[in-house]
View: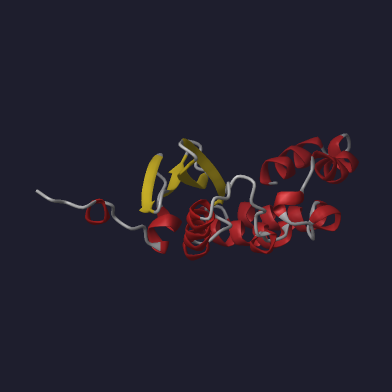
Length: 171
């Protein structure tokens, strides 16, 4: 009937991105989509074609990168392709990534309404403040290494194994 692709694709909204839990792919346009996994994690992905080869670019965690910011990134990637540059080789704008402490507070605030047990909610952030933030709270999430994790967990692994296990899950 003459439906154009732009008319068929429903643009995502910030509210939808925050609340969607059902696994699947949710398209926004410009090759950008939100991939929701069965375990609940949500990632931004952009499908592009460069020199005849289709690629999927992982653009980051949807809990950490807003819809507005990721749309800008998607458009920048398309411009880069138009200019003959491979977006997979392009440097990611690292300023968009929060440090671990900022990201933890964001995740805490997003999950707070869903936790039925107030004690659990309080423990979530307090254990991170006590055991993790002093070690790598200031490091951007994309720069955290396994040695950073070890530096936080090793001191408590033998003396407080249950706490260490929970902290590891929260990280």
